Image (cartoon, rainbow, N blue to C red; front, side, top):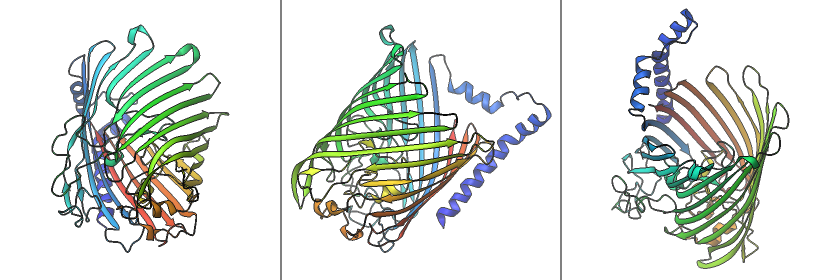
Length: 503
């Protein structure tokens, strides 16, 4: 109930701010068709964000109230099956351009969290860390999640070089599959990669090439010091983690637009894992993939992507570590019809397959690894369910098949409403979890039936509204009716209200 009340308060606050901000402008627009001059506040923000010709800065504040039930526990009989938390993410960033083509970019970010119910997070528990979850404010720490130097038009060529901490994403917009989030351990707070990126735009070939080398440390303070303590404490003896292992990597990505209304991408990705935390991996993963997107007719769009993985991974089988060969594959597709009507109606069919480990092959690991794609790409809810399935790793999606329709429209100006349904399947049963390490927290064998492959029915609905250029908000709901893959057959739920302010 606290979550629902908070959602209503956030929405009401946004509406009031919208009315206060836009009422004078609306009256002026009715009286005089030409656009009104920028308000005093708007002029102030424009002037302050660029105090000199070589310096710009900006900031934002995101407030989220998230409530979820059974998403982590997979059953309503477990302690802490309900979670209710308010997340306050604030960021400040700046770009300095001392000379043409050379820029220094930085961003400072923090996200304290107010737990309204006892925390599920191991970082916020009563001492010792195995104690019960705590309520109240978890202040966490501040971190520079962008700190890089970028050189464009390098050597007077269509070449750019970016070195340092940066955000990198490949694939379709907001559907980035294998490369986006290098820091899944802190949720959507940050998603950077510590890397060097070289991009070359071969315009005569209509092809863009990217080469990236990276090294991602599992702990927040290893490369750069954090503001306040991100390391071990009495109540958090392991310290905070950005991911479960140190990760080295290389990415070669090419994108070609030679064919009319078509884009063809190809890539090679290497990811080397070195365990840092107890549930981390030791692995060498090689991925070959391709993606084709296009608009074959006026109202139609499509995207098809697939990848094959090979290499080695060290798995714990019945308490003993053993290196196994990786043979895994995955793919996804989306086909959309755009009505291009007054309500901007769009309908889509989406599907995805991520291979699972065959329990009958002891020397081979067929489990697909989403690499740096551990983020809520299609579901804010279902990423939590994998904590109990993959040794405590959030958003480590695999052993998954899904398919279903979606529908979006704009009922009024600056508002969107979307609905999506997916039927969820598991290609393999979860026997691998039973064999990996029964003592590991996060592997709960009694939560799975071992006698079914239907994960459940998934439903999502999202309402978004942009009030003005400085304020937007959304209401988000998701539900999963568990299928025979699970033992308890309870319903998972997720509710979120968000207000997002930018300077």
